[in-house]
Amino acid sequence: MNVTAARIALRERFDWIALDFVNTTVLTRSGRVDALADMTEFFSWMERATPPGWQEVRPEGVPDRRTLHVEAVRLRVAVDRLLEASADRRAVEESTIHALARAIGWARTSRDLEVGASGVISVTTRYKAVHPAAALAPIVDNAIRLVTSVDTSRLRRCQADACLRWFVDTSKGGRRAWCSMATCGNRAKATRYRARHELGGGAA
Ligand SMILES: [Zn+2]
Image (cartoon, rainbow, N blue to C red):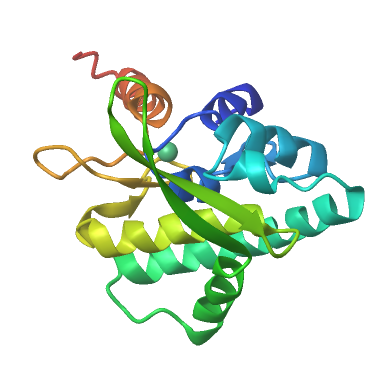
């Protein structure tokens, strides 16, 4: 994957905010491209991804923003380990549980029942920060819901070269190999096509 392809790849979404979050890094020929690499990039990623409660718990001051950034990079490792253990159907390590348990307490939630003008009833969840990195709590919540609600044999890491991203295979046959057809799937097909031609096969 070249750097431009990596930038495009990092804008892709995976239905679960926890997957969007853990998938914020890809490998390229010129090294790793990481949407959490620095604070500015990380904040623009958060603005785009808007995890639940982001508007309410977004830290304003630089020290708090720095704390959030540092904790986000740490949490990404923990979420990755949680997915790995779940996909392998083994117990999650103690240190990973600890990291997730810490972060989930950083935001308090309350719920309100609301009736809209047309009489439609809905539940609104409100978030209150009790830590500068409160924005990560809903991501942990989402990660736990993911591993406890999907068939974990369908939770996989992309098979494309240099792609570390996770996805849930929702295809009928359950044999999807790539996180995204638009990027990795097409790339893998193009590579296979080239390989066939270089071998003199020529068959399409
Ligand atoms: Zn991929």
